[in-house]
Image 1 (cartoon, rainbow, N blue to C red):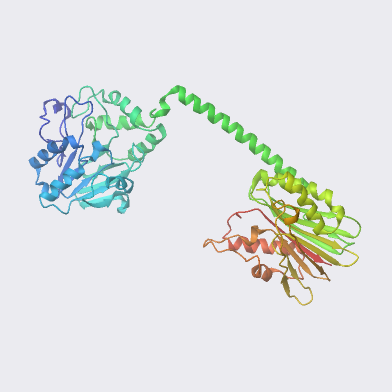
Image 2 (cartoon, rainbow, N blue to C red; image 1 turned 120 degrees about the horizontal axis):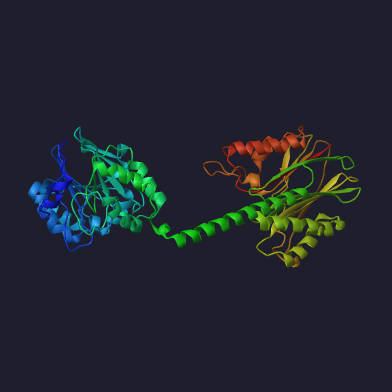
Length: 521
């Protein structure tokens, strides 16, 4: 394989094209007054021509002259844009106009999809291939001409790519390995690694991103690296440069003072997060300590109750109260505070306190009205909650149910096995003052094996992968199918929860949920 020897670079006539390998030519722009030089490359192989990075508007005439030395531009097949910067392809519109003037309507631009979004602001006169959507990100023109496109995001553009010419073991590296050199030569000298440090410190965003780029190319068999800026790098320097840039400080993080500030801020945030997690755990444990046991039997009322309440996060906006008010009256209340997390959790604790003060009223509607009076005055009006409150009376075997916009209870007749949705009206607690606060109430008599299901909206509104909701709150047909009046309350709620979980594909529920099953013995 033919490669130009680096040491001969000092004698090149840069006004003309330079052959740097068997099929690759430098067709860049050299301006001895400029701080940064621009390298474009032309590949002539297998009867096809590929131009890599057309350059800026100041290099258009120079580029066309060099192309005319080597080939007929009318036969140019592909132009590769490694990213969209004006020095990389700012003259693309001029080049495409020239090609069309010469009758070339078929030249195709190859670039990353992210780069293509910006090319429309440079030119709209092109056919395009997205490098990242080609099979194996490779353009295979012939057995002797294969180009692989490697994504190097944010080095230094989101859609940046480098191009590996497999047949000649050349890497066209775009801005990577480039530099602004005091004394420019086409081929890099032994001090090149030191000379391009500043360029990478300023133009590459971070050590981590640069490391990722190096991992994408480190296993390639490379004979030459051909950057858009700076000098062409021979094999003896290429490997050491890749190793160097795998652990290279660059971007804004090279500022030690700024880095120290970031480290301090990170440490502070980590400490605050740890404290917050500890406090959340403490709050969650405190809230759980206020909940009643999950499975209870009240022989005086001939009632068996099981419930499950699970938060979406550490602290729940759902809460359950079970209270033996007196020898005859047993209260069961489930609430659902709007929102999630600590604020909702604190509201549930507040409701429990308010219930303790109001429970002596016995009647569930009066209890909710009393809670609403206090809640409306002390709770943020954006932190209202829905509630279902049942009072079971052992003397009459009746249960009075009051609803403040809660999910309608589901009642099952243990003898007929028929069910009924008890649709009750009502407004949430804490949303309206007393005169505008309404409560739906119903009284039913429970007999042996009758079942009552109370729940918040967490299970009913769970969705599957197609965003279909599990059930309708007004009909609850899917929940009703699961309930067997012969089962214990514990088994009933476990069956419901399992069914909903399977319906959702085993994913975590997207809301707090509470469900209670009450059975008359």
